[in-house]
Image (cartoon, rainbow over the protein chains, first blue to last red):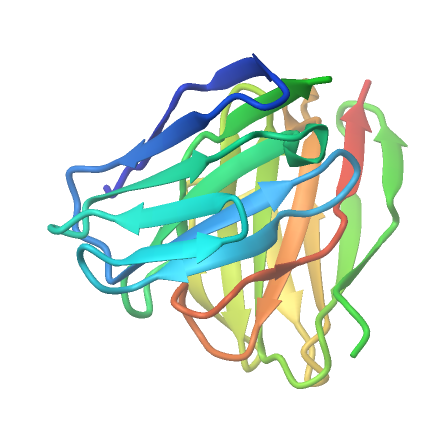
Length: 110
Length: 114
């Protein structure tokens, strides 16, 4: 069974601080997706990383896929209250079902 | 394009009853997946349908079932409801089978079992 572990599960920081969320597995994935979910809504895709070692930037968000394609990280620079939400990583392997991590609930305090 | 729609948005049932949830995927998407989301367990995969056939299944009891129609709309049914079935049920559509494509999620159906 493929599992994805996210850490930390909860994170509350002040506006302007930096943070990193981790997504780890013992399994290899063909790609890793990051989603953000806000209250009352379904998750929305932020980015997909496919190549080992790949780094993608989305404004103040930086996503990295591990060299062995078993782990990923999300780094937010100068966090803002609008970044508040549940961040989910999900691993894909061909035609298999998508495997989701438990999520990191992020709160950015003004 | 219109997004994924789910009906109803909220539902309250009592133990022992059954419930049917509906999902309309994005036009042109042939894959529909269902997930159960709870604070304790996170997002748990229920099943995936593609071209009216169940292609992947998660580790849920047989009380959870689903189907997909020729227009790709999908329904999931939960029979003999238990208190532990209270959750947010999310459906997601994608153009192809499996997880490599982006999953487009609906807003979910919040089920409360009393």
